[in-house]
Image (cartoon, rainbow, N blue to C red; front, side, top):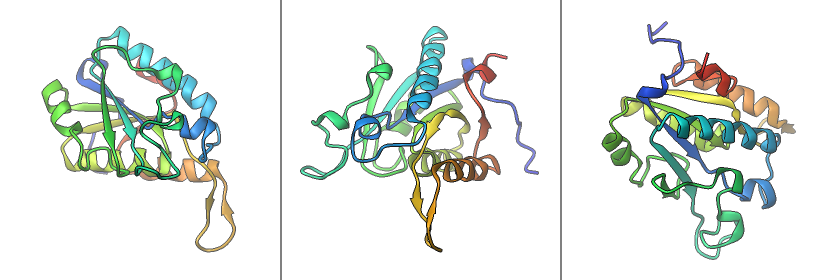
Amino acid sequence: MSGAPLNPAPLDQASLVLIDCQREYTEGKLPLTGVTAAIDEAARLLDLARRHKMPIFHIVHHGKPGGALFPPDGPTGQIVSALTPHAGEMVIPKSLPNSFAKTTLEAALRAAGRPQLIVAGFMTHMCVSATAKAAVDLGYRTTVIAGATATRDLPDPLGGVMPAEQVHRAALTALADRFAIVIPGTAALTG
């Protein structure tokens, strides 16, 4: 209804933003449903971005010193091996769900000079969603790769537990309503 284009970001106009692809979600206290498949898809996306010489930004969540989650110097605070940054790929720490909040991401993206973002990572309902929503406010057009995101079961405030698949689908559906183009996987970027 807004008249925005519905096609995914062209690779020559986009930067890749990988959010919180950390071991906390694979072997830490926050295991995600479907995380292995999402990491595999994110690896395909990262390979595509490298082949097309896209600017690549790895966002890493840093927990509080001595905290239980995302220790900056601990093993679960590290990026999963399949998505290890290469030389020239910027790693930007954050402490809030929105990857732009109190970080250097916006300045780095502006310096890259690309008006669109391709986003993947974890968790769909939290940091991916918060970042995609903030990107709209900053003037970016965002594409989210659904297959390269994942989340976990959540307590339902109205009772019971909402399964991860429902949380994931609801988060992607909300993003697709105005905040991002949501596509199933990397293959949709290449035709």
